[in-house]
Image 1 (cartoon, one colour):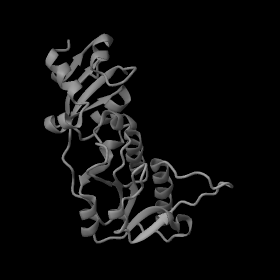
Image 2 (cartoon, rainbow, N blue to C red; image 1 turned 90 degrees about the horizontal axis):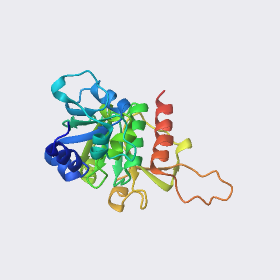
Image 3 (tube, rainbow, N blue to C red; image 1 turned 45 degrees about the vertical axis):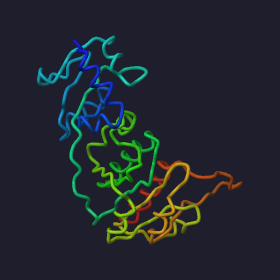
Image 4 (cartoon, rainbow, N blue to C red; image 1 turned 90 degrees about the vertical axis):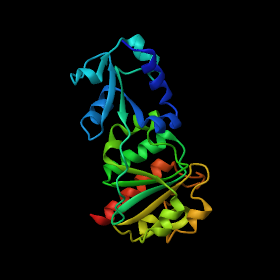
Length: 241
């Protein structure tokens, strides 16, 4: 049975300030929770309508009605779990790093985390204004990949200044990525959905790259940032195969 204090804690975790304050985040759905349980993440508690057969002290069986009270989903999916936010590991600058300059959409960030996992990018660095990776919508979109990518929030401009590696900025007027020589290490920077890479970060790009438009009318303004990430990572990895 759910207690009032449990309901209060879980619902508060929808907001970033309480996630940071408590050091906890929410994951929903059987598949996602099972992925997280099989990772190095520490479980705080799971509330479920169907038992995971784990430590009884960390599991509470609840009704579907109770699940609806705490779920952030329109249609709750059997279970909700609370996990401890892990400590960020040291960034490996001797590999390919993806950097996000104020990406704001949770779905985009979740997809980019999955792409990093798919293409073997270990480190994802985010500007402090980028959406929180422990936002419930981001967690949902990662489908468990968040456990396999080291995500760091930092002052992006300072990080790029101090990192002794090539910085690849993504711009509409950059060099055609299909004709570019791409190394197996460096920092690939992707910008905000509406404004692209900021002026301060643009100044630090050692190489400007772009994905050319092939449409006959050349009318499409830009690609979705997650879609662009997929294409660019595919090209970087193709070069290193």
